[in-house]
Length: 260
Image 1 (cartoon, helix red, strand yellow):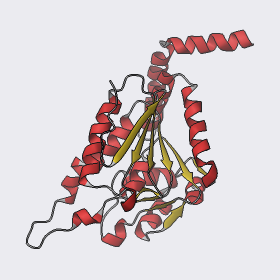
Image 2: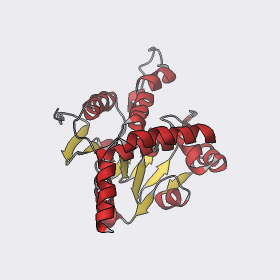
Image 3: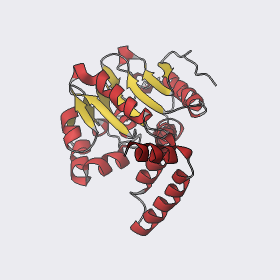
């Protein structure tokens, strides 16, 4: 199955099983619109079915990664009913971040600029986050009188701890890429001129590893937060059974023995 690139708000490309999904509303810092949500839903459906998929790279066009919700679409004509924001989440951001988390291949967020609100949420739900040193993460929900969404209440607390998450959200603190890396919110902050190289190095690294092992590692690591120790040990056993049935494991063992 081939991937479509007939989108208004996205750019989709594929090389050697690595799909790049680029948010493409640069004039709005790639903020989410209804059209972008609909196109992301379609694109992810195609990506999930893509034969030979090895990794997904999520990034933004221009100087921003994603500025979150486009508030222009919150402009309600006088006399019209206001939308239920919770129901809106159930139909847009919640299924989006859930699909990214459940994708059985590594998902890299290549954060090329500001990631704000739901934009920060979709970055943090990715498996590996690499950011330009000049990038920033901000969670401006409290300024608007909202609660964090797009998975932020889960990913942020688990990444930086309760105390930092509370201050970041309630005070609306801007987190630099370097701070985010120091606090464990993201994997790495790199100099802007090295950004593309670092992302490519990560991709090359992943492509050199058996895909089944990466899929099972992703599954078990995410469940570790909720499982007790004994349940996690059992999950490790189950995943290792599946990994050991893959011929790539035995090929790698033989390569090691031959080299030795």
